Length: 243
Ligand SMILES: [Fe+2]
Ligand SMILES: [Fe+2]
View 1 (cartoon, helix red, strand yellow):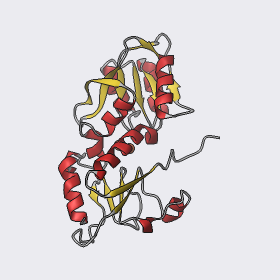
View 2: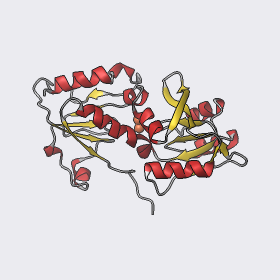
View 3: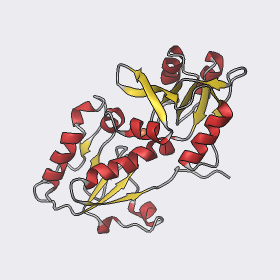
View 4: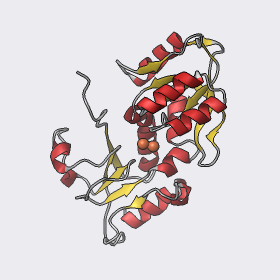
């Protein structure tokens, strides 16, 4: 199918105008005519990688007509590239819901009403403890390591804040604490975020930015396949090593 048709179909399901105003979404190659690009094979990844780094995964851009990434590229791209970012984080049944469903949580209310990013949820069972939740997170997301802040006396968990990706910044930790979340599951914990969480008495489980968005990436692949194109999802894993 033509790229223009594919983009129209995608944008009817995941509208560009849902994205944050500052976000760079949609087709990145504004100099190309989307009526002249035929799409059969799509590569879907979290992030744009240079061809050299991509080759370390045994993958070559020349085998694909289009790259779709979740995060906007941070350098020049060598392949037609389409970005589905905060519009996917925000839309119901998108990245956030995919993570919530993977963890069998039940949605209660939106975390950030200004942007509609994130949810306050509850575990499917009442009164679970932190150990249970840590095991559940590691099992469901296939993780050997998570970063945890378990505050003194904060062991019973009934409310969980969930954000795909970059949630563990001070702004969102403040919001989650104000909404009485017992624990916040997301990625990108920083020094200042960690200290704020301790002082506000909210527990933290940092599963990493990448892993927090991975269920959403697989869900996105299914949605793109509805347009009858072949989609290969490449999990590029957390972009560093633990040694
Ligand atoms: Fe995201
Ligand atoms: Fe992200």
